[in-house]
Amino acid sequence: MLGRFGKKQFICMALLGGLLGVAPGLETPAQADLLLLFEFDDPSNIRQDTSGNDQFSEYYNVQGSHYSDADVNAYSSEGFEDGAVALNYFNGSQLSFIAPTLTVSPWVLPQMTWGAWVKPADNEIDGGILDSNSPTYNDPGNNRSIRLQAGANGAPSTWVADMGTGIFDSGVEATLDDWTFLAVSYDEAASQMTFYVNDQSFAVATNFDDSSPNGFLVGEYGEFPYPTFTGLIDNVFVYDEALDANAIAQIQNNGFGSVVAPVPEPTTAGLMLLSLLGGIPMWLRRRAAAHAA
Image 1: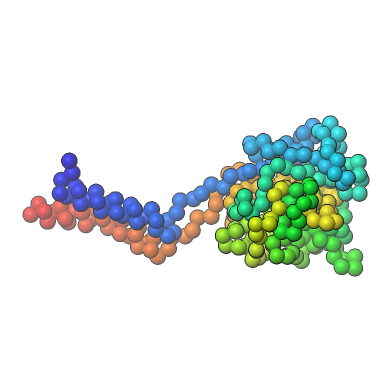
Image 2 (image 1 turned 45 degrees about the horizontal axis):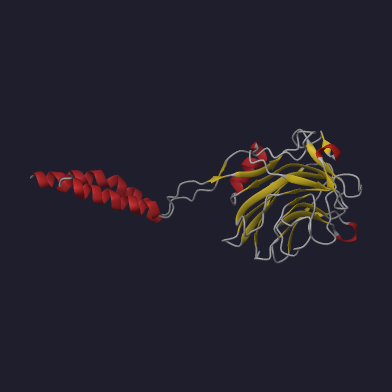
């Protein structure tokens, strides 16, 4: 049985524990799960998902024909790291794009981060890198995407991303000689996405709605005229959190794994509660001394 002092001590600590549980700025960190990772390092199984989730995907050529592993000649040993997938829009007999079964639409993953390393073979054309549409093209118009957009009058293509209400153009020109790191983090609750192109970042307002497509394309943009990418793509990744700039830099510089989502700094209320917590032992000792007297 709790004595008089013990009961008060217990109640006080319980109340404070409850306050700390809901206090702003004292949240525990959430782990971001890696949902999909295409490293493209196995020539015999170019579409292998090495995230541990074994996501299935299908191959297509520009005519929409399926490929089997034995038919695909899409491995390149000149990847950003080891192998890469080589896509070619202009060769109808070569692999044009990959369609994973993972759904990356806003209504399924309201928070998400995806990206890849890319090296275009042509920087004067359109070309899809990642897209939330499906190979059936039955739901265009409101898709998440990262892609190349051809410049006017023969100007180099630039890296762009769909916002749900239009296209955000980073203004960063595609180069043929270097690998480019691309990523986008989405936070639907905040109606915001952040587009990363190498070391540059662009925070953009978004407005994706319930008409967002239900699919996933690697190497194609799922709106007419359905431009596919020509060049190399490596290390395609999808996380289930809207990662911050530090986590994106960690992926870009150090690779993959379990990335810790951003943890807010303690607020004033949180610091006050921590201060109160530190003073409780002294208060309890004084109360005990008073009762003893």
